[in-house]
Image (cartoon, rainbow, N blue to C red; front, side):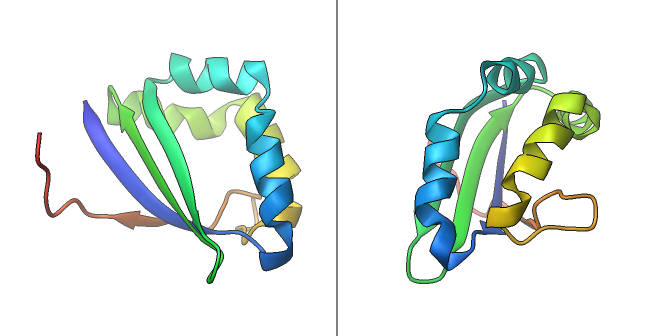
Amino acid sequence: MIRKASIMFVNRDSYDGYKRRHDELWPEMAAELKAHGAHNYSIFLDKETGRLFAYLEIENEEKWEQMSQTDICKKWWAYMEPLMDTNADNSPVSINLEEVFYLA
């Protein structure tokens, strides 16, 4: 498995909505994430700053990169856009983190 981590940003007045939307994750979105090799996907919120820390494990980088091209992913991004810092294509502004330590 490949471990990936990133930071995203949710609007301070949208914490509850962000959590609710993820609690009610569309079944077709969950299925597509799994189909693209996502496992152990977690997102954590720093309520003081609005920073989100996302962690997931993937099977293959190329397979994972294809997720962003799916219709359901684009629909999810549009759904989440009002709550987050986003790019012009509605994808979340995301800072990829480099792994510097791992203890198995």
